[in-house]
Length: 411
Image (cartoon, rainbow, N blue to C red; front, side, top):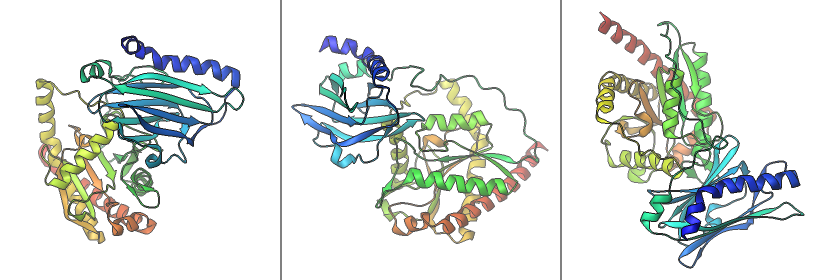
């Protein structure tokens, strides 16, 4: 076991080099597809066994992450169509599985473990005639100490995003120029978000709504728009806010359509940042959104030191009132449009995506997939158009009031 743990850092590199030799021999082409009939996750003694059938071999790597204990598998892009998570996952050693696009060109599967486990064996068998492949993993129980010691994502330029770079200063914006709004369609790729019957998933609905809303905002002539993602791929919470800063955003709006049982939630709701949630449902939503990022393999454990924390608090003293005013204007616009809005449409929660210190930020739950009425509305193009138009009105009203207040401050 000790020898295996010592070689774990080389295991994912071995997958790359091994598959490189296969690729030159077999000349793989096209997107690899998962073969569901050859795929299964099952208990094996006190551990687990993972079988993933593929139409052809692909480069892969694996690593573990702690808190909660997870096994992460990255692949050159895979077509997951046909793989049903409920049928794929059997047994109790692995409690949940997520899979999808990680970044463009790469796919990720995340297995949440019932407890600390180590990979005892990993083998990719490729049929020399058909090129079909089966990835076989054997997992065995480990101690919490050993698991934590070996956990952590490797860094490799072939797989990972580049290291953060210092940003150039954004030039001052002309007061009469359109404001830059960064729209953040929630979830994406490996993280589908909420799901409803009929294959409706939050990540698809919010991308569609973000693009429709963006077009309406741009056509108004008062706003420019950028989106944090324009396709079905994963973007971490940390990267979403970083993209807004890099773009020099004037506003940040995160878009969601969650599923929630507390209080039979329905109707559009606008959230602002708060260290303490305004109610139990809001706390649950914030926990779900941040946990989805953890399950996708992102470690957000870094915290600000005392000096940085003080500076951030000072910046928020100016930004937070603008965020509150923005949320109030959006709610007013939505109410004038006729809704439906939630009976308590303005709420607060500790969403990580709202923690930018210098950009007014709100999170809008356009509706809840757990509500039949909201789901029908979200699937209705005319309702989405009316809601987007109502949000445009709210943004225009906010801009007028915000410019008036800032002019008074300058005087």
